[in-house]
Image (cartoon, rainbow, N blue to C red; front, side, top):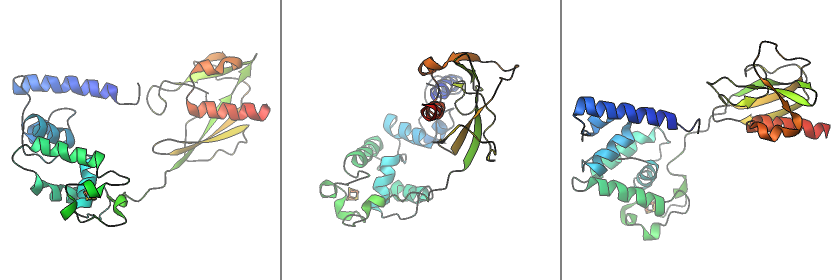
Length: 255
Ligand code: SF4
């Protein structure tokens, strides 16, 4: 479950409950501002809880609502800059009466009618005054931000073999692939290593691409913790995809 944010959610939930007890007498505050001040509650959750749970007239914006309003008002500024215009366009439309139902109806409209691909304008209740309706390029709204090229990093992984086993380590607890079993190797940096390798893979992470090169090493770092793992049983090592790809490339080559 690591990396999916569940631990942070659990911590925030507890911290939030403590603040609700200590500062609000055990009752959730009802205003958007007070809700946003609670641990783990951002703009979207504060507005949703205020509108849906407490009937407050809050401006709720999720990705579905963002799309509906960007099209309905033909907002052609790319995200995330468009967010401010979308909020300004939506705010005067939020009713005093049943703002929670209004927010949920807009979310449903976005999910089922004003879909990212193939919006069903003919059945849309907003059709008569939607500014995007009838345009051939509706699907591109809301405009995405221009794509930034991801930086590329480079790293070495060490293949240290003895008696049909290879030396595996655990990655540091913090950082990419934290705590997972891995081939040993140095840090991932911007510099491309000059050493020639026995295999190489490219792997895309969310924020960067990595080229990892596999090189032979005769002996392991005596101080490092790790284990000798049978090459014939590498499937059971639970290695991350990156290392599995690299090893299978090398084994194919030797094949
Ligand atoms: S008319 Fe079409 S583009 Fe406009 S809000 Fe409805 S589904 Fe979306």
